Length: 146
Ligand SMILES: Cc1cc2nc3c(=O)[nH]c(=O)nc-3n(C[C@H](O)[C@H](O)[C@H](O)COP(=O)(O)OP(=O)(O)OC[C@H]3O[C@@H](n4cnc5c(N)ncnc54)[C@H](O)[C@@H]3O)c2cc1C
Image 1 (cartoon, rainbow, N blue to C red):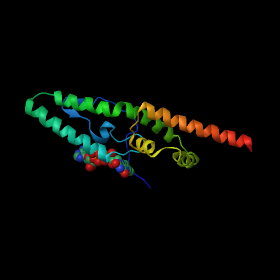
Image 2: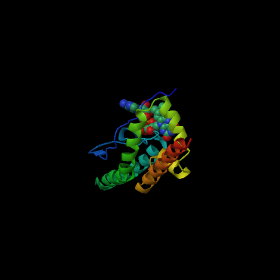
Image 3: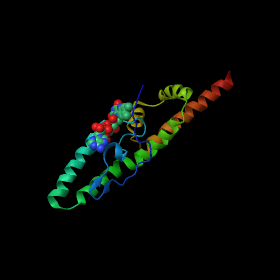
């Protein structure tokens, strides 16, 4: 049994609000597909620490804005697609989860890792959709042949 909550909403790129900065789970850094947050929260937390040090040393908030922009670049598009998957998964019942295990075998290792890490690019999304549609058509044709 799992207990605990993770934000499950679209990524919001605004992180810096003057002296208040969203980070970690409060900034939706955990992946929308599987909620992997530890690695990402540590990495981005480290970046924020460096940016904060520079901002304090120079009395200039520019490094914080650069931190916010770098996070947007890393997460905005990836988490947009990840959030679509998240919304879909949230509707799954037990049968759908069983079927999803079956579908995983049609994903290449690279695509599966990308899905788990919510790291997508358009080409991979099209490739994965094409592969699944192809398998669906093949299954349909096979059932007609019988
Ligand atoms: C059930 C579950 C399973 C997970 N499994 C994985 C996994 O396998 N792999 C993975 O990568 N990620 C996993 N995650 C996600 C991961 O745990 C989080 O993304 C990550 O821990 C977020 O780090 P954080 O520093 O933002 O928040 P947290 O780790 O939650 O740290 C926040 C800290 O702030 C403290 N705090 C809260 N309010 C106050 C306050 N007012 N004053 C002082 N302290 C306060 C809390 O006690 C807590 O220690 C899982 C999450 C859940 C809920």
